[in-house]
Length: 409
Image (cartoon, rainbow, N blue to C red; front, side, top):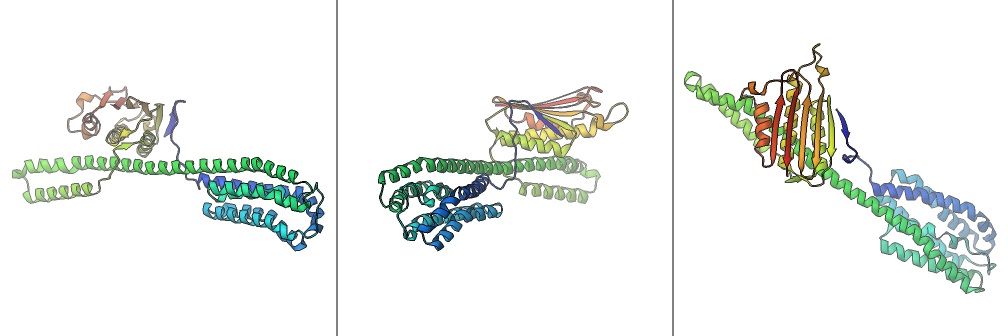
């Protein structure tokens, strides 16, 4: 089956994804690792120049923790869950803050030149970004402000208080720079979370659409049962005087049992169904019936449909296609596959309409027996019995068949 649509209609798509928010966090983790490697390259000179001012063991441990941990996190990201990644980011934010604060007791040979700042104070974003990933918004912003304000006393200690104003200026400058990164991460994660919520809702609606399709299948089974069992039982009972009454009773009992089974298996469906999932259910039903029908969608609609209407329209479409496959025949050479079939769904806020066409052998509607359930019950009777719904069948011998079912709100 091929599906085409007009430009003003966006057909629903359904993908199984690991989660949009998880994807955002994994991307942030990779970017953080890249930033750590970049900062390592930029800080190598400072690391060597400032080695004489701090305890050597601290320099090695702090440098390894600050620049190495993000790379390990990036390597683990593809196999980590969202919760695990947030824990890793939170742990790194704490590790980074510990490295920054521990510089104070590790500083043993000061003061440093006024133009030389401790290498840890120039990397504040490496800590604030993981905090934005790991914690709630309020905690992330508090961490950012505390990290930025901590820069001032560290710089004052480093240069022996030579120029406190420069230290405070650097701290204040750090706030908006880190805030920009924090805001981007928070917005991206929030957007990913909203996508996940919408995806979850779409899957739930898809399940309801599947239930609707299942109900249509049950109705088709019921129609077949009425045709094969109920009417046969009625005819047998009407002629009971001329037939074996025991056989008639057995047939009636079997029919009642099958009706009970269908009643027990009835599917609960919501009163309203979103139009996107009506389209999905219709497309799935068409595909299950025949893979040689073109499905075209015109227009759009935002309001949901009553599930009883959606069910009836899908069932009528399926029955019309089934009749076409069985009875439309082929061309003059007997090529059945040459019969062209199409289903056009027209959507508007006023209602919906489905037109099923084939260019097969056609038939004379007036010659169709009244007991042909496919036309009389499954299409015309079932649809026309619903408020606002209508169904028509047009056909002529050798000119194809057109079945139109619709509903006006």
